[in-house]
Image (cartoon, rainbow, N blue to C red; front, side):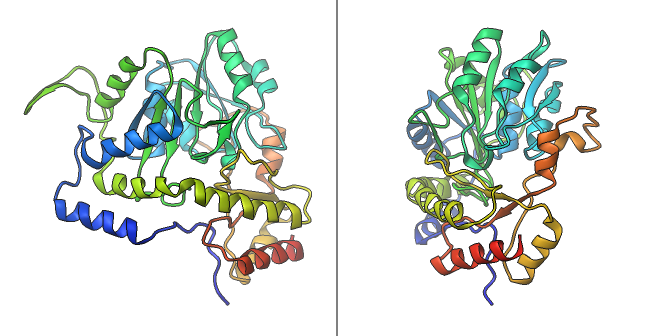
Length: 360
C-alpha cells in the first residue's frame, strides 16, 4: 500500500534548472543580499504588497531579528502557547518575557479578547500566529496596538499566501515573519523573510540587513564597519533560486490545498476540525481526536502519516510557566495534523477521509 506523506514539497524541472544554474555560476552566497536573493526579495515584496522584504535563512531568524527592532528586554510579548517553540525562543533571544494567552477554540489563533485582558504596563508586543494558515483577527490586534502603544509582529510561518480583508498576509503588521522550511507552502532547503510596513521603513530595513550579516555596515568595496552585534542569518543563492520558482506557482498550489480542505471539512465526520475559510493557505489541516495515540497508530499502520502541531510551549521545562491555559491544554491533548499537500491524488484524499472516519 502506498505511503501517504504528511508533508511533500512540490518540485518541477524549473527548480532543478534553477539549482543547476546557480551551482554552475559558482556564486552561492553573499551576506550583502545580491543575485537571486535580491530578486526573490523584490518578487516576494510585490506579492505581499509590503513596503519592504528582507530575506533570512529561517523563520526563527526572522522572528529573532523582527523582535530585535523593538527592544523587548525585560518586557512582555503576548503570544499563543499553541505554536512551534521558535515563536517563544525568539522572545528569549531578545531578553523578553513570553506572556502566553489562550486561543480561540474554533480557529486556534490567539484570542483578541483574552489578549486585551493580558495587556499591562510592561507589555511591548502582540505576536499572533496565523495557525495552520488561518489568519488571526488582525484588525482587532491593530486596534489593541494603537490603543496601548504596542507593536504588532506576526508569526506567518504557516501563512504564505493567506489573506486578511482582501490583502495578503505580510502587508499588515509592523513586521511579519515567514518561514520557507521544506515543508512549507513556499518551500526552500532553508529560508525565511521579514516584511515591513511602517512609515519609517528605511531605518528598519538597514538595521535588518546589518543584523542578518554579522552587524556589517558602511560597506564600500572590501572595507566595512560593525556598529553592533549581528548574526549569520542571510539567505543563500540556492534557496532564493528555488524560492523564485516556488513563488510563481504558490497561488495555484494553495488553491489545491483549499480544495482538499473543502473535502475534509465536508466529509470528515468529526465535529472538531479546521474551519473552511477561503483566506487560509492551509499549510496544515488539523482535527481533534480524543483517543489520539491509538488513532495515530492506526493511521500509521495504514501508511498514512500524521503529526502533532503542537505540544504546548508553556508546559515545557525551559519556560516553566505557571499559567493556566485550559483551551490550549485541551486542544494540545487532542490535535492531529493530516496530509493536505498538493501532491495528494483524489484517491489519496478519499483514503485519508475514510481512515479518519473509521479510526477517530
